[in-house]
Length: 92
Image (cartoon, rainbow, N blue to C red; front, side, top):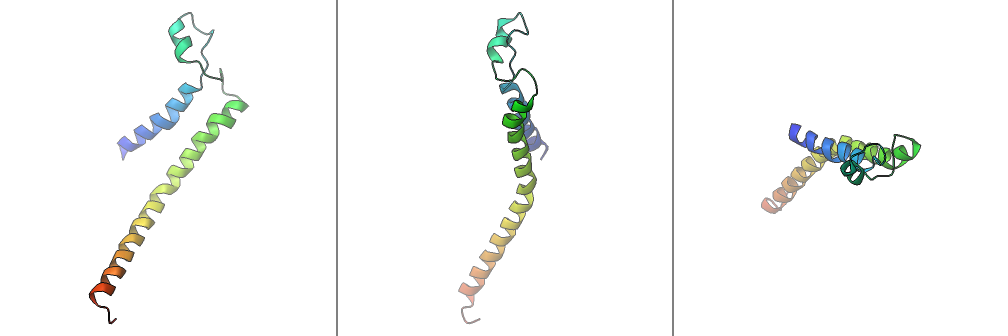
């Protein structure tokens, strides 16, 4: 569970933050200017409209997925039991 948390954190938190960051003109090193060539030099309303919405949508889907997965699993188990009972005892 902790491994899944770190993968999701890095994939949806750090990568989204780093990919949209604009570092041009802030450093004399050209390497950083070429790697961080994004749209937003700072957190502003446009950043929150693009990247913030994506981060929040991912967090909301990760919040609802574990209970949904549990109920789907329990429903499939119940369905398999119902089908199995009907095939073993068709007179019931």
